Image 1 (tube, rainbow, N blue to C red):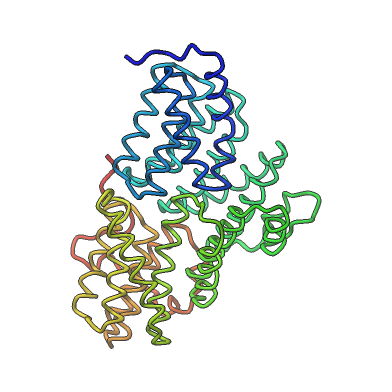
Image 2: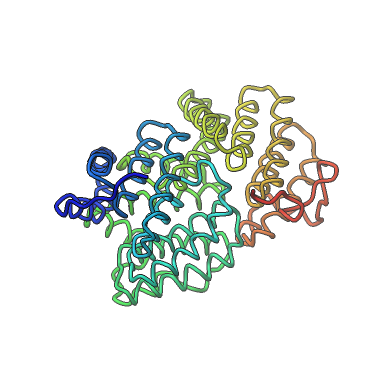
Length: 419
């Protein structure tokens, strides 16, 4: 029932701030707080306009990223959607919905549901001529698809198609991001023949190092973080833990702005890496980093058990392993496997089985170790991460394991569906 904005000057002020907020967001979270406060002040004092929805989103994201108030931030994001519905603004709707799906939804809603949303929003953005946010939606699809455990073969094909689309629309920044993500996916997928950087025709960016140099010379700090994040993922899954920690530290040392999905993944893998290094090097610093990750996931799991429980259980299992509390560790490993299965994170089910298998090997439980590694291999096959099957730890796992926990199936066939 709030009045509409009729003051032309104020309306154009809202339009200007709606246009620049994505760029301010890339520069500093403090600037986003300021612009959200200004947009809301105009809206509440002088009336609402379609662009008010962007102000609601900016405030929503500021509450979450700066003040860690997930519940209130989520509520303001929903209010942004109400504003969009009231004004029926098709040209603005894709941008605001993409932002909410990218930066807010993961804290409350099953991440798998966002994958389909990004594909739909990509098309909606193209229909209204918003090429920039169509590219953002494409990146969201790739990122959320990866963390949700979608087929790597499917994501790899989408990466190739999206890279070509970005090349044709001359979106170099997004293209470099996509090529780097594509390279990481191909390493996990075991594809060595195709060069993901070949789509960039002028030949100045041919590998990770060239992409990083481009990001540094152009001041693209978020791109630098994305490159470090991709290298962290690749190094971790292939067991190169020192390299993984190096990438994690470089990621943390960059600008404070990051996508939530990226931050969640990095915090998870950094914590697991820290616990592994703590067992091999007995360094208190590694334990501190690992415990920090546990603290983060405990706070996040309160808001979405679907997205965060399995990760929390696995971090806790590794912590108990480091502290010599083996019975508690085994219980948490089992919980991580079960939670990953129920919530359809097949890649993290495989990871939990792999780490549980390593634990059992250390404890001298050879038969259970082999059984768990076979199960991990089956999960990675379902994920289509064929590159991981070449790791030494899978060479003696020639037989599949139907279940370790009675009644448990591989992957997500019997898992719950997102609400």
